[in-house]
Length: 70
Image 1 (tube, rainbow, N blue to C red):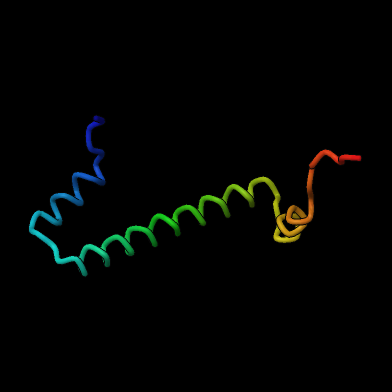
Image 2 (cartoon, rainbow, N blue to C red):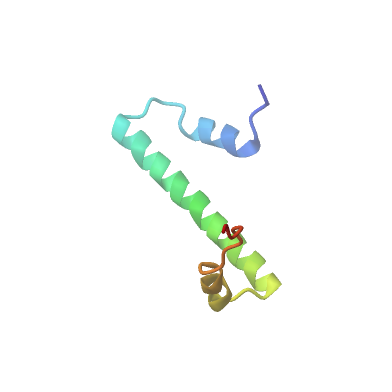
């Protein structure tokens, strides 16, 4: 098993006492939202760096590369 990273160690320190089921659910939601926001920012940064626009992304929805069968 891999060693814990700095973030994991800090979370363990912060929550050394037992939490209720409701508190654990709230914590999971907060952490999920945090990670989702980081992912969105990373995607936006990468997309901007490559010149992708909303129009480009929308055009991808209509593309397909399936082999036509006769």
